[in-house]
Image (cartoon, rainbow, N blue to C red):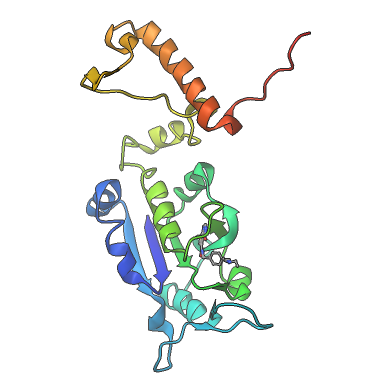
Length: 237
Ligand code: 9D3
Protein backbone atom coordinates (compact mmCIF):
# COMPACT_ATOMS: atom_id res chain seq x y z
CA UNK A 1 0.00 0.00 0.00
CA UNK A 2 1.22 3.51 -0.82
CA UNK A 3 0.52 6.54 1.39
CA UNK A 4 1.30 10.03 0.13
CA UNK A 5 1.35 12.82 2.72
CA UNK A 6 1.09 16.46 1.69
CA UNK A 7 2.33 18.81 4.43
CA UNK A 8 4.13 22.09 5.15
CA UNK A 9 6.16 20.21 7.82
CA UNK A 10 7.77 17.24 6.00
CA UNK A 11 10.40 16.87 8.79
CA UNK A 12 7.61 16.05 11.23
CA UNK A 13 7.30 12.54 9.75
CA UNK A 14 10.90 11.40 10.32
CA UNK A 15 9.96 10.17 13.82
CA UNK A 16 6.54 8.48 13.73
CA UNK A 17 7.30 6.02 10.91
CA UNK A 18 10.87 5.07 11.92
CA UNK A 19 9.89 2.57 14.64
CA UNK A 20 8.00 -0.63 15.30
CA UNK A 21 5.33 -2.12 13.08
CA UNK A 22 5.20 0.72 10.54
CA UNK A 23 8.98 0.76 10.06
CA UNK A 24 9.04 -3.02 9.57
CA UNK A 25 6.16 -2.87 7.08
CA UNK A 26 8.17 -0.31 5.08
CA UNK A 27 11.35 -2.41 5.26
CA UNK A 28 9.64 -5.50 3.86
CA UNK A 29 7.91 -3.53 1.11
CA UNK A 30 4.30 -3.93 2.24
CA UNK A 31 4.03 -0.21 2.94
CA UNK A 32 5.44 2.80 1.11
CA UNK A 33 5.10 6.27 2.70
CA UNK A 34 6.01 9.26 0.52
CA UNK A 35 6.16 12.68 2.20
CA UNK A 36 5.64 15.74 -0.05
CA UNK A 37 6.39 19.37 0.84
CA UNK A 38 3.41 21.54 -0.14
CA UNK A 39 5.76 24.51 -0.72
CA UNK A 40 7.24 22.64 -3.71
CA UNK A 41 4.03 23.62 -5.55
CA UNK A 42 4.25 27.37 -4.93
CA UNK A 43 5.77 29.76 -7.48
CA UNK A 44 6.31 33.03 -5.57
CA UNK A 45 9.63 33.73 -3.86
CA UNK A 46 8.11 33.45 -0.36
CA UNK A 47 6.61 30.01 -1.17
CA UNK A 48 3.21 31.21 0.08
CA UNK A 49 0.71 28.47 0.99
CA UNK A 50 -1.80 30.54 3.02
CA UNK A 51 -3.88 33.69 2.76
CA UNK A 52 -6.48 35.69 4.72
CA UNK A 53 -10.04 34.38 4.93
CA UNK A 54 -12.70 36.04 2.75
CA UNK A 55 -15.21 37.80 4.97
CA UNK A 56 -12.57 38.52 7.62
CA UNK A 57 -11.77 36.80 10.88
CA UNK A 58 -8.90 35.28 12.81
CA UNK A 59 -6.02 33.34 11.31
CA UNK A 60 -5.02 32.22 7.85
CA UNK A 61 -6.39 29.63 5.41
CA UNK A 62 -4.48 27.17 3.19
CA UNK A 63 -4.79 28.35 -0.44
CA UNK A 64 -6.27 25.92 -2.98
CA UNK A 65 -3.71 26.29 -5.84
CA UNK A 66 -0.68 24.53 -4.27
CA UNK A 67 -2.90 21.69 -3.00
CA UNK A 68 -4.55 21.06 -6.41
CA UNK A 69 -1.20 21.37 -8.26
CA UNK A 70 0.44 18.93 -5.84
CA UNK A 71 -2.22 16.22 -6.23
CA UNK A 72 -2.27 16.72 -10.03
CA UNK A 73 1.50 16.32 -10.21
CA UNK A 74 1.69 13.35 -7.82
CA UNK A 75 -1.17 11.66 -9.76
CA UNK A 76 -1.19 13.07 -13.34
CA UNK A 77 -3.63 10.30 -14.40
CA UNK A 78 -5.64 10.08 -11.16
CA UNK A 79 -8.17 7.23 -11.11
CA UNK A 80 -11.17 6.64 -8.81
CA UNK A 81 -8.97 4.18 -6.85
CA UNK A 82 -6.59 6.99 -5.86
CA UNK A 83 -8.36 8.61 -2.94
CA UNK A 84 -7.51 11.95 -1.36
CA UNK A 85 -8.32 12.37 2.33
CA UNK A 86 -8.35 15.81 3.91
CA UNK A 87 -7.45 15.77 7.61
CA UNK A 88 -9.34 18.56 9.31
CA UNK A 89 -11.05 19.28 12.61
CA UNK A 90 -14.36 19.44 10.69
CA UNK A 91 -14.10 15.92 9.28
CA UNK A 92 -15.99 12.66 9.81
CA UNK A 93 -14.74 10.89 12.93
CA UNK A 94 -11.98 8.33 12.22
CA UNK A 95 -12.53 4.93 13.88
CA UNK A 96 -11.47 1.28 13.53
CA UNK A 97 -14.21 0.53 10.97
CA UNK A 98 -12.93 3.37 8.76
CA UNK A 99 -9.37 2.05 9.16
CA UNK A 100 -10.50 -1.43 8.08
CA UNK A 101 -12.03 0.07 4.93
CA UNK A 102 -8.92 2.15 4.15
CA UNK A 103 -6.65 -0.89 4.58
CA UNK A 104 -8.28 -2.33 1.43
CA UNK A 105 -7.21 0.66 -0.70
CA UNK A 106 -4.05 0.50 -2.83
CA UNK A 107 -2.98 4.15 -2.69
CA UNK A 108 -4.11 7.11 -0.56
CA UNK A 109 -3.05 10.74 -0.33
CA UNK A 110 -3.46 12.53 3.00
CA UNK A 111 -3.63 16.33 3.03
CA UNK A 112 -2.63 17.83 6.38
CA UNK A 113 -4.68 20.90 7.23
CA UNK A 114 -2.95 23.81 8.98
CA UNK A 115 -3.67 27.33 10.24
CA UNK A 116 -7.35 28.17 10.76
CA UNK A 117 -8.44 25.82 7.98
CA UNK A 118 -8.28 24.85 4.30
CA UNK A 119 -10.08 26.58 1.41
CA UNK A 120 -13.41 24.74 1.16
CA UNK A 121 -12.92 24.00 -2.56
CA UNK A 122 -10.35 21.38 -1.50
CA UNK A 123 -12.99 19.46 0.48
CA UNK A 124 -15.57 20.00 -2.29
CA UNK A 125 -13.55 19.25 -5.45
CA UNK A 126 -10.21 17.58 -4.57
CA UNK A 127 -10.76 15.35 -1.51
CA UNK A 128 -12.88 12.18 -1.47
CA UNK A 129 -13.42 12.42 2.27
CA UNK A 130 -12.68 14.77 5.18
CA UNK A 131 -11.51 13.12 8.39
CA UNK A 132 -11.01 14.17 12.02
CA UNK A 133 -9.39 11.87 14.60
CA UNK A 134 -11.41 13.14 17.57
CA UNK A 135 -13.15 15.96 19.40
CA UNK A 136 -10.13 17.97 20.48
CA UNK A 137 -8.16 20.79 18.86
CA UNK A 138 -4.81 19.95 17.26
CA UNK A 139 -2.53 22.53 15.63
CA UNK A 140 -2.72 20.76 12.28
CA UNK A 141 -3.33 17.51 10.43
CA UNK A 142 0.18 16.04 10.75
CA UNK A 143 -0.40 14.14 14.01
CA UNK A 144 -3.74 12.96 12.63
CA UNK A 145 -2.08 11.67 9.43
CA UNK A 146 0.41 9.71 11.55
CA UNK A 147 -2.47 8.21 13.55
CA UNK A 148 -4.35 7.16 10.40
CA UNK A 149 -1.25 5.60 8.78
CA UNK A 150 -0.28 3.70 11.95
CA UNK A 151 -3.81 2.35 12.39
CA UNK A 152 -4.15 1.24 8.76
CA UNK A 153 -0.59 -0.13 8.41
CA UNK A 154 -1.00 -2.68 11.20
CA UNK A 155 -4.03 -4.14 9.38
CA UNK A 156 -2.17 -4.85 6.12
CA UNK A 157 -1.76 -8.53 5.22
CA UNK A 158 1.74 -9.69 6.25
CA UNK A 159 2.33 -6.93 8.82
CA UNK A 160 1.28 -8.55 12.11
CA UNK A 161 -0.46 -11.91 12.33
CA UNK A 162 -2.43 -10.98 9.18
CA UNK A 163 -0.33 -13.45 7.16
CA UNK A 164 -2.88 -14.23 4.48
CA UNK A 165 -5.73 -12.11 3.18
CA UNK A 166 -8.16 -14.80 4.46
CA UNK A 167 -6.86 -14.33 8.00
CA UNK A 168 -6.97 -10.61 7.31
CA UNK A 169 -10.71 -10.88 6.58
CA UNK A 170 -11.63 -13.05 9.56
CA UNK A 171 -9.64 -11.20 12.23
CA UNK A 172 -10.88 -7.68 11.62
CA UNK A 173 -11.58 -6.19 15.01
CA UNK A 174 -13.97 -3.34 15.56
CA UNK A 175 -11.52 -1.83 18.02
CA UNK A 176 -13.07 -3.51 21.03
CA UNK A 177 -13.31 -7.30 21.19
CA UNK A 178 -16.99 -8.20 21.67
CA UNK A 179 -17.70 -4.48 21.93
CA UNK A 180 -15.89 -4.16 25.29
CA UNK A 181 -12.46 -2.95 26.37
CA UNK A 182 -9.71 -5.56 26.48
CA UNK A 183 -9.27 -7.29 29.85
CA UNK A 184 -6.50 -5.98 32.15
CA UNK A 185 -3.11 -7.74 32.04
CA UNK A 186 -0.43 -8.59 34.62
CA UNK A 187 3.08 -10.02 34.34
CA UNK A 188 5.94 -10.88 36.73
CA UNK A 189 6.61 -10.20 39.54
CA UNK A 190 3.44 -11.72 41.03
CA UNK A 191 3.92 -9.35 44.01
CA UNK A 192 5.12 -5.85 43.07
CA UNK A 193 5.49 -3.52 46.07
CA UNK A 194 2.72 -5.40 47.81
CA UNK A 195 0.31 -5.11 44.84
CA UNK A 196 -0.48 -8.69 43.92
CA UNK A 197 -1.48 -10.07 40.52
CA UNK A 198 -4.85 -11.88 40.78
CA UNK A 199 -4.29 -15.40 42.16
CA UNK A 200 -6.67 -16.93 39.59
CA UNK A 201 -4.27 -16.03 36.73
CA UNK A 202 -1.46 -18.08 38.32
CA UNK A 203 -3.39 -21.30 39.02
CA UNK A 204 -3.58 -22.73 35.48
CA UNK A 205 -7.37 -23.28 35.54
CA UNK A 206 -8.17 -22.02 32.06
CA UNK A 207 -11.95 -22.01 32.43
CA UNK A 208 -11.65 -19.96 35.65
CA UNK A 209 -9.16 -17.60 33.93
CA UNK A 210 -11.56 -17.09 31.01
CA UNK A 211 -14.43 -16.17 33.37
CA UNK A 212 -12.19 -13.85 35.42
CA UNK A 213 -10.98 -11.99 32.30
CA UNK A 214 -14.50 -11.59 30.93
CA UNK A 215 -15.74 -10.16 34.25
CA UNK A 216 -12.66 -7.89 34.58
CA UNK A 217 -13.23 -6.56 31.04
CA UNK A 218 -16.86 -5.78 31.85
CA UNK A 219 -15.93 -4.01 35.11
CA UNK A 220 -13.22 -1.94 33.45
CA UNK A 221 -15.56 -1.02 30.59
CA UNK A 222 -18.29 0.05 33.05
CA UNK A 223 -15.77 2.24 34.89
CA UNK A 224 -13.90 3.86 31.97
CA UNK A 225 -16.15 3.44 28.90
CA UNK A 226 -19.77 3.07 30.04
CA UNK A 227 -20.79 4.26 26.54
CA UNK A 228 -19.66 0.84 25.18
CA UNK A 229 -21.91 -1.25 27.46
CA UNK A 230 -25.16 -2.70 26.11
CA UNK A 231 -28.15 -0.66 27.38
CA UNK A 232 -29.21 -1.73 30.90
CA UNK A 233 -32.46 -3.75 31.04
CA UNK A 234 -35.32 -2.04 32.88
CA UNK A 235 -35.45 -3.26 36.49
CA UNK A 236 -38.29 -5.40 37.94
CA UNK A 237 -40.50 -3.83 40.71
C1 9D3 B 1 -11.91 28.62 16.02
C2 9D3 B 1 -11.91 27.19 15.79
N1 9D3 B 1 -10.63 26.71 15.27
C3 9D3 B 1 -9.63 26.35 16.32
C4 9D3 B 1 -9.59 26.88 17.63
C5 9D3 B 1 -10.91 25.51 14.46
C6 9D3 B 1 -9.71 24.71 14.14
C7 9D3 B 1 -8.89 25.04 13.08
C8 9D3 B 1 -7.77 24.26 12.77
C9 9D3 B 1 -9.41 23.60 14.90
C10 9D3 B 1 -8.28 22.81 14.58
C11 9D3 B 1 -7.48 23.14 13.53
C12 9D3 B 1 -6.31 22.30 13.19
N2 9D3 B 1 -6.64 20.88 13.31
C13 9D3 B 1 -6.54 20.01 12.31
O1 9D3 B 1 -6.09 20.38 11.25
C14 9D3 B 1 -6.99 18.65 12.48
C15 9D3 B 1 -7.64 18.00 13.59
C16 9D3 B 1 -8.03 18.46 14.88
O2 9D3 B 1 -7.83 19.60 15.29
N3 9D3 B 1 -8.66 17.57 15.70
C17 9D3 B 1 -8.90 16.27 15.34
N4 9D3 B 1 -8.55 15.81 14.16
C18 9D3 B 1 -7.93 16.66 13.30
S1 9D3 B 1 -7.42 16.26 11.76
C19 9D3 B 1 -6.81 17.75 11.43
